[in-house]
Length: 434
Image 1 (cartoon, rainbow, N blue to C red):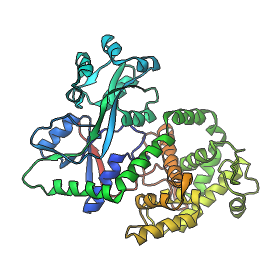
Image 2: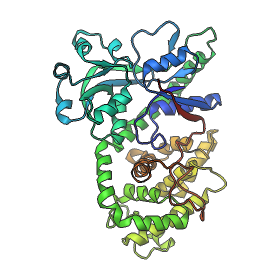
Image 3: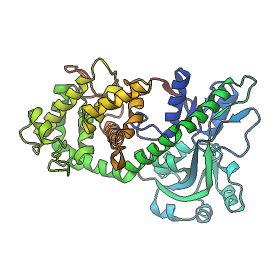
Image 4: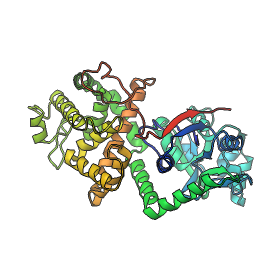
């Protein structure tokens, strides 16, 4: 499958709707899918024509008319194009001003000019064009090499996780429909599989559930929070880093995962308290703290050591039943809702014929275990920790890669791993340029 270059912090930390649907499709077909990252929609279509990929997932609306040799699958999401700039002042300007000032540069390879043909959109044709795709254009905007470009609202939000100086401006045109693209050949078997998959996803409610989940996760991880996290990284984390490292080394846990968990729990505030009785840097309840040998929850060192012991206990309880990286993500879920809650979710997955050893399947049923505002809380908790972990990894060891952030106790690499991927064993990622 051809997919767009993703400027988000880490595919392992947050998979968007498009990638989750690809994983579900691969699982339905019981196949392993190779993901080929390309920088533009035009390049995707070229790979399809050359028979180098079977399916393209542009993640953006298509031009109104595709060549006859390409087939557009069912629509599954709407996406709004917006101006994206590197200053608030530029982002606040309207389109004619940006075009007149030659501050806007438009990718000619991602279908914008073909889609925006209404009279009020035609001014876009006066803007300078480039053959670069949207992702490298946003990188140039962030680097202040150009002032503004066009991108989809959701890819701006993801890119801002890594490039926080990007600013979303006005909407351009009406929202468009996102679809997968395939070759239009005599053998229509893949086309039929795609059509049946989306029909089933709609009827079962899966598509609606995944859309709701993505909206919720994006709201919980706005760029303001990323900027706050990076400020805390410089001003708060140094006080506790040594304790995180010691506890991680003792219990075979990447210290950055413990730090990410702590930030999610207390924002690295050793005096934090919750209405439900949790407190301290790691927000332990009194009973769990006692069981883990913690004498003072509000002492940062004690709290970190007890939480690491508790994480290791939860992890060891899944040994032999759940493999990495799924075990790490389920351990985080159990930290939030308790081991009994996690076990209940896994039993429900098994009752539905799923695999209780895979985090994506457990994640899907977790919101059904509670009602009201807390229904999605365990999912938000895990995904937020994963993204803070990804940001910590970027800022502390950008080149590191390993299999999982939790290892068996005594492993010599316990202090420096980076999370493995999304919990899917059905996709492999590579890239194409040119």
